[in-house]
Image 1 (tube, rainbow, N blue to C red):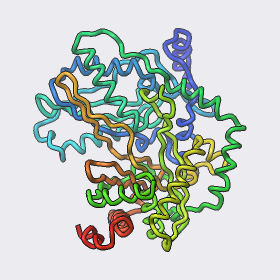
Image 2 (cartoon, helix red, strand yellow):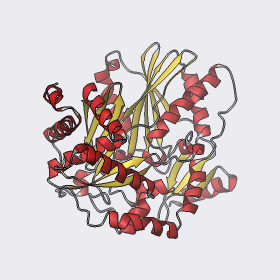
Image 3 (cartoon, rainbow, N blue to C red):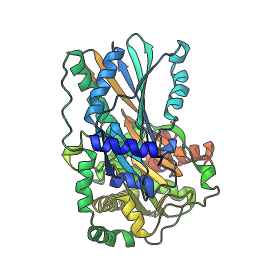
Image 4 (cartoon, rainbow, N blue to C red):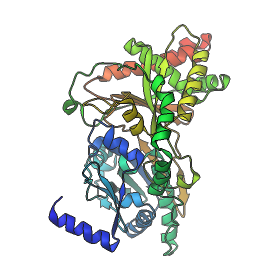
Amino acid sequence: MAEDIRARLKQWLESGEVRLQPLTLPQRELWETSPVPPGDVANHICTFIQVRGKMTEPDCIASLQKVVDRHEVLRLSFLPGKTQPLQLIRATSAPNLIFREITEAQRQPEALEPIMEEIFNEPFDMLRGPLYRAVLLKRGANEIIMVFAIHHAIADGWTLGVLVQDLIAAYGEVVTGSRKALPPVSMTCNAWDAVERAYWTPEEVEKRMTYWKPRLAGIKRLWPRPTPLSAAAGKLKRHICHFPADLTAAVRTVAKQTSATLFSTLLTGFQATLAQWTGENDVVVGTPMANRTKNAVKETMGYFSGVIPLRGQVDSGRPFAESVRIVHEETMDAFAHAMPFAELARALGDPAKPGYNPIFDVRFALQNHPVPDVDLLGISMKLRMRSTGTARFDLACEITEEGDGMEVVWLSRPSLFSDSDVDQLHRTFREVLSNDCFPAESRATALAN
């Protein structure tokens, strides 16, 4: 560290302007188990918020300032350390909000896309921070698009819903002339992590590993890696597909009939899809978990989510309903034995290797964290998530319920999957679910639509 920065840091620490904290358990996952550097743009969570109503520049700045004051992660960056970095949390910070003029032609959806991508893909300064940016694009007199990018080290999908709720609450305070701050969160990320760290003693980790070691023994990769990390790094390619309403209804019906969750039913079909694609019946995928089991952190912005490996033995001769029941039981068991992924990878002796994520290369998720649409005092805010994934996985399938149907977003590494490969994967997934969830007399019609 440069001497001037060291001296400035000492002054800040003595004055209370900053404080240092160790990495939280979820943050350790990014530094210890990811084959992609933490500063890579693939670790950005990207979204945009549609704002309708008259909102002035001073009101926007004042509203975001209240949110920044409430949530320490928006005042956080990372200080390099001898073994691993430390969180550097500032006592105060101005909002990182930029207003950007766009032309009439740029207000069209197809023209907005490259502008948003440019904002999403700008790297963050991990030392100086802040590790988020908000850019407001004015589309009309009463419509603003807030393009929001935030680093995964300080956020997860749940965080974005909290952001919208707090922004609208802060705006209500601003326009009514209130100078009150938003109420402090019940528990900060670091207070939560202190509780978690106290719980995950070496003894507790070893006890939990008695479940995971035999469960993950002998796992193997689903495909060889043809390219080194340097050629494979970067953001995954995004493909947007859909499941129609009739197929969605059929999947929900099977879930209800088997007393399983929608997630377990979709996962059963996804495992069968991967088995057909690879010829391997032993399939391991990773799935995220919210990890917000304490009510005190449900209104806190930050990175709380964990990841769980799910292993399935696909038997094409077994009735689908029976497979769903087995997958559901095994999934509930895996969630009940969840543990910090960094600790799991370390205990298994499977550290990150160039081009490989520990334990699994495929991510599967049903996005069901709260995504509010809110209206207050003539302003409405609608959050629109962007499935981006991270470059540590080769393939991801993220499903979001969308009205009567489902949006299916595939994220794939271009060096491993062509566009036609992903199209075929989606068709296979749809065919698997259609063949197994529709009554026989309805299958042909469903597949034709």
